[in-house]
Length: 368
Ligand code: BGC
Image (cartoon, rainbow, N blue to C red; front, side, top):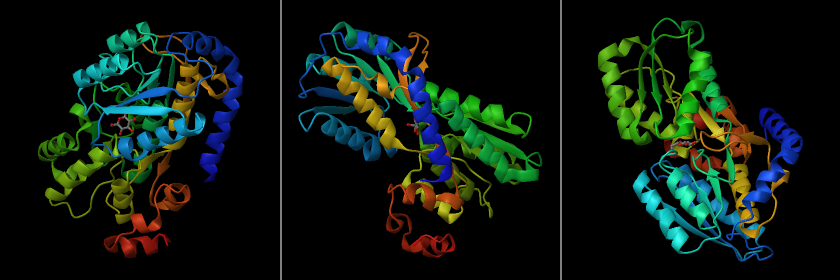
């Protein structure tokens, strides 16, 4: 763990003790429904993830949550899983199916945080507590776990500024935000603006429909022709998937040197583009603590037990106040700290990152 991460981990642990008392009321009330099965480890956790075009969900979040549930239930708990493939109506019917199948608790990463409010309410009425995962679902949720998403946007904006150095105002930047249905996208965007505004010239800004890399690619191509390829000095991309689409558009425009492009998620493809010098940075979010917190809160809720020991924040959604939450910090990952982050934490091996094409670049970075 690098120094920054260690400091961040200590900060989370310290604030956890401060607010744990305030949070236990929420936890107790939440566990009281008929979904609670005090004492029994044989709980069924319904897990609903929003999409599968972004690598994190099925590569990290799902297996990490399954592992944590198994650990917390001595192998007796079960996870039933559905992926909404970016469709809010599909996710709503997946909630119905989970209710019909009488799961004991739901972990939901919402496609659309507003549209999910009705299904969350239905689950609650059926006695099934709900943990909002990564995105703050509206409706009567019992708990929430995510990253400090406003800070993720600030980390991205600060890295872009650092990459631009004293050239920050010598040209134009393009901003590619995430989907408007995702409250995280709003937070990334406002965090980035809070750092960038006044320090760069923003020529074009897009909210990307469904977070789709191909939409980011189309928008980047449009920005290139509207602004002029020689004038773009940097691109803010909210995540790695979109950074892939953006970099493809920059290359297709025939740029010999690519402007710095940001990202998020430390996807393998993103880390490889960073090593190759095509993408400037990503935000490394450690999914293991996020997934473990979700599993811990979900199993406790299903068993009618408290989970206040791990809560480090009380978060307000537009519909629920003081939701017991666990927020994990994210850190900037550039060429300089590939090893100290994803390699040292065991997320990827050097062999996975350093394909034949990247051998020389990897050697330069001391990745062996
Ligand atoms: C997540 C990001 C992800 C994006 C697209 C956000 O809510 O926090 O990690 O890249 O959704 O799925």
